[in-house]
Length: 339
Image (cartoon, rainbow, N blue to C red; front, side, top):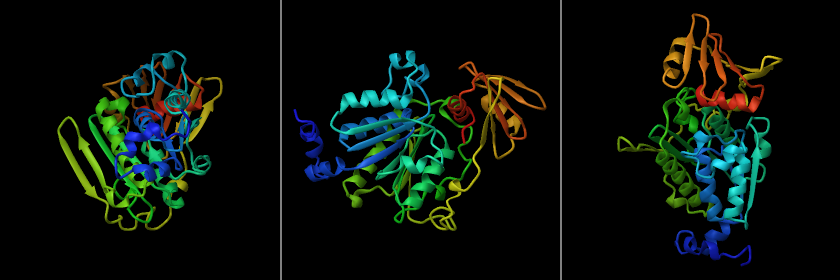
């Protein structure tokens, strides 16, 4: 069978809102998925199977056993080989669809490298696990005029929305920076079905956009709790007054100082300096259920299941002890501290 054959997409093309023209449009589109974990693997799986012409994946982490409960592209061999998630996902996806271009990039997304990652991209999908990166994506996408498909999943709760510059408000109009700090899959858990549903909601809106079926776009920020059987749609009609991103065009995440990250030479320790103080009592309560803690008036020491340790100080410093790998340290920081 010819690589460019449309036969593999025959059932998708029989869906009238897509059709053959829509399929050809998808094959000429390029997307960036930031984060190849729970959400990112589902996003990538759907878009690769749908025939999007270029799927670019970026992630800084590697595959661990605890990922397999919900990160659908990985298996136990990936864990044994400690493969980077972007590489493991690229390998699996190329075996699924060899007729499109798939790029797996092992990198920590920052404001410095994000513009390069966005070159030639038509739309960005959020597969991240922290709001610092989400707001960075939101701000740069709105500055460049790129749609941003937001998704978040934790516990049994999920949220999703497609933000389109010039047509909808942005992420900052609905979520304030810092609101999700401390609530990650590693601190309060997550069930796999909520991940699948959030990512599927993201992909459906992305497909509508990429085939230019704008009238079918949902136009809401959808939130739900699968366990409690709740769902709510908030219409995305009005931007937040004086929003620094979509109204004032200031793009705070492109301007603010990032947490300062340094390796402490000879101590197998990475230090991350937060831009805000740390309440030791609050964080001890958040982390007590998942780690062994030692609290003093001066610091909070957290022994992680992975083997490393976190040491939190009131002045905003966080030490990640047991590694000098900056990517590893940032991953653990995002898992347990969030932001």
